[in-house]
Length: 445
Ligand SMILES: Cc1cc2nc3c(=O)[nH]c(=O)nc-3n(C[C@H](O)[C@H](O)[C@H](O)COP(=O)(O)OP(=O)(O)OC[C@H]3O[C@@H](n4cnc5c(N)ncnc54)[C@H](O)[C@@H]3O)c2cc1C
Image 1: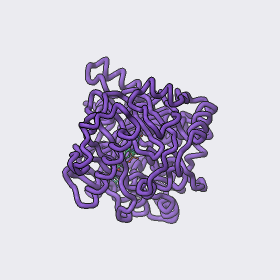
Image 2 (image 1 turned 135 degrees about the vertical axis):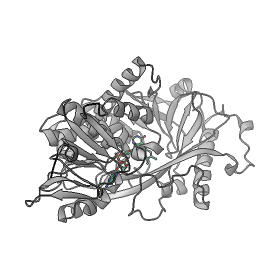
Image 3 (image 1 turned 180 degrees about the horizontal axis):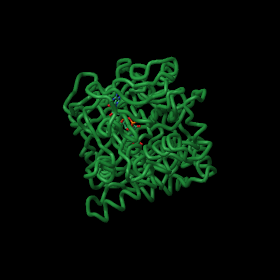
């Protein structure tokens, strides 16, 4: 027998960026008297975002991504203002430029092995220029400018060596502190005394979608209880690979079969000897470094793609920061080494004394690392829409943009669930769950 306790106006499964934005936005749009249940299987909310450094940029390679990210940036700016007004945080949203440099350095063999197939072979200025012109022609402002080496040297004295002949500087970029944003998103939508709002329940696994005789979804079986609702959203990240377990059928098999799951690894390493500055650098060989005055010097890089085949994603494949096996040591040393040599090669301001070439790179202690599973559809774009005739809405495939894009994806869900038009027709087409995905090579940082 159904009663108020086992019904909800909407159920959102998955507590990552997409699920959190979706639950909070559904509540905002459905009205203050509604009750929404949001569940995640871990004890902590945030999904893989809890373990990654969250960058954003308004510099994209598809219309859909530009529109989706634009929604995200607007929302984070708004949340940031609220957080400042309340004195909760001054730093949840930071703006600083991304610098995509172009030069004559070849991408070393080992980097080529590590970079995924989704990254262009060796981005040159025409590639970045196309992204800039495309983004502008779609009506979005990346705040991008091209500068030559002299100008670059003047503005960023650190980048004053050989191997860099021009750069695309993207000003509409920066970083989000998702942990702060996440807590605020949850607080402002949480259930109040009368039971309306979003009820966030951790350690609650959705095991099966309940269907009526006509194959239409009517609720979710969580094992210990069944909750009924007309509106069910699966924001399950990399677990989209396991969609047929929760909703068996050909359609689920087809959708899951189009996902690839990529494990990436992020880590931070001390880079003493480099001048304080605040920008995000993407070098010609795709070494990536962020230097900031506030957090100490940091760099990050990607994991090797020889990781085990990923068919059983977990949200956090490396739950312990101190977890280091031999393979990991190799990866860390590789990227710490790359970042060191990048700066050493490109800057006469590099403090050689602070870097001892005779010391093993392993002597540079990483002070943390992060890992997670990207879930990418074959064309790198999100997948949002009802699964077959069940009415269950899938919101997955956020790939490398789920923090920037969480809000935009949530608004796509709302369009599907409530018949609204928050996003354009073209974004709907490009993210349609029934589209035929064509392999695409996009910008991945
Ligand atoms: C190293 C790294 C760096 C990144 N950097 C950036 C960046 O700079 N900018 C950016 O925008 N994005 C970045 N990303 C990508 C971004 O983190 C992801 O796109 C985003 O976090 C994915 O969010 P999601 O909600 O789709 O999935 P997830 O965060 O994976 O969340 C899915 C959730 O669903 C839960 N779940 C699954 N099945 C069930 C079930 N049956 N019952 C209950 N719960 C379930 C999972 O446990 C998980 O909590 C990065 C990712 C990585 C790995």
